[in-house]
Image 1 (tube, rainbow, N blue to C red):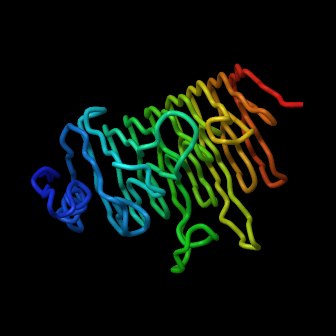
Image 2: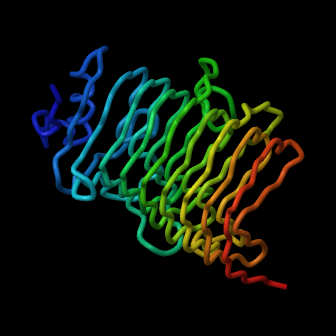
Length: 295
């Protein structure tokens, strides 16, 4: 039987943040389905893990809304995430809208919608994801890297699928990003990206401060439509539709359409960089870009 978030709602006791957390906990070890109601569900200021909703070690959970009518929203552009999943398996997000609270225009905060770290066999489908100041969806490892700040070992994210979603007004370093690496088998398929600040999809791994990062590998980026990437919206000068950099291996980028990419120092429909990018298959990707260069 599904669990309804509305049954757990108490405005005086954490509101929808606590209600959704309690609903997932009610499922227990077996997992199940959690259903959110239609309406604008305002989330409280994030605490644990820098997220309004933080889930660790959860398995076999479907969190579902009623399409764009179910809107999870920050009541201010916090420098945090709406949902964060760590070391989870079979987590599926469907038919929800995520509003991270950043108005259309230049980036003013680092808010993020979804964060998957060390997660396996999970997906985000048929969602609207927007108004993010940083990454909209991050898929990466858990436990290595200067940015993770979690000392208990490393686990790759494996076989995460991002499909049939709409991304709107997403800034930072990529609407979908494998920042710091550690994503194996990521699929980014059939999404629409509009009004972005830097790039729609960024497959990458960083090697900073002497830390050896985990590579992103066996990825597929296909059949996406990217319309409108302007570096000025991100207070920057670089804009790419799709990018593959650093430790990215065994990937396929095919049948994407990218248009209206504007940057003052660098602009490209598809950007590839790094001596360790290898075994990359490019097929029938179309780029119709508007370039603006500063001399």
